[in-house]
Image (cartoon, rainbow, N blue to C red; front, side):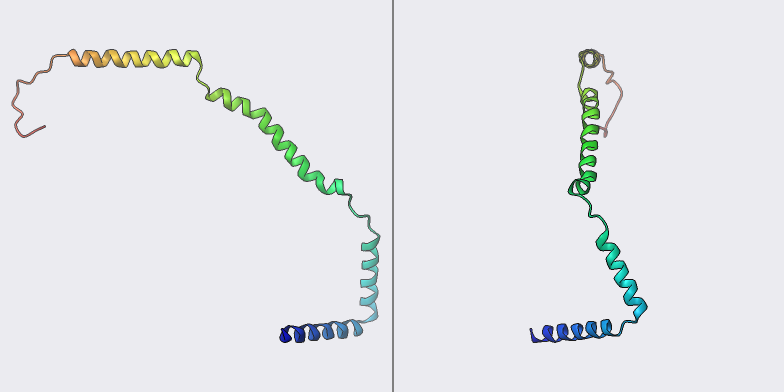
Length: 113
């Protein structure tokens, strides 16, 4: 911990030396900049929170507008159900026909599945 104190003391001494050796023009310029900065009006608390609040409201509005569209596009309607059941019936009819269809097994198929 003593080594940190030495560094602090050396840096403080270097800072004091640099302040003491500033030329007049630089010191005046720094003083004027400090005075301008201190005279500026500080932003209000409302203004600092205005951007995050407005962004949150915009996102909420976007979700409120587009969420119902996504939900209705994913819902299966009664017409879709009728179409799906018709496809299933057609597949069932085809499978029934294939089960009843005659199969020719008269040719020789040794060695094959």
